[in-house]
Length: 286
Image (cartoon, rainbow, N blue to C red; front, side, top):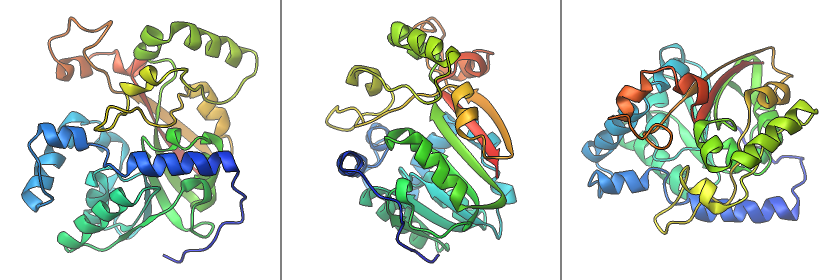
């Protein structure tokens, strides 16, 4: 994939957040769980052990990422984590490109691709100034990444720029009206609800690290440098340039007010994830 320098300016504030994100996300997302699983290397057996856990813990990913339809298509993944999705996309026959702000996930994705004898390449860079020409991709997959950039609107706009006509964006973002937000930050969530009714369009940023910690934290116990939450209402308006928009809420845990459930697996089968789930999975067509 041909790289090019973006023309968009970058503010000092954005540059500072980028540096914080590079430092934080250089530790692979999923590292805490890998330690719980006893994974200490990147052998095929160890990576399969992690992937089996990951894909069973998030079974609904197969509803949102059309792996079986991607053969021969140019696919960009933004935010690479432990590389599970990167390897699956490459295995699907897609012409795979990965993008991550930190070097650790890029190295893991490229290692997986080489180790498995697959085609594709991941590069380091920010989606806020994505180093690719206009209309480079048929599909973009980005799970749990754009809400950490500090500029969700610009990140979505860059995805739009990078897609070809009729190309699709599959994005996961944290839901502003999830049960957890109502439980942990009720007054903030209520203010956001009223602001939206009076015309505000955009995400809401949590006021404390404690609110972010349950979503993302590293080995040192630090929360992610920046996290946004967004509603379906605002996300639909922020992506109004796209020709179609569909979504589904997903994910739930056995925590207040659902602590009485015996297992997350059973809770996932109920109606609650679709109403007050932690995440929005949206598919948009350019």
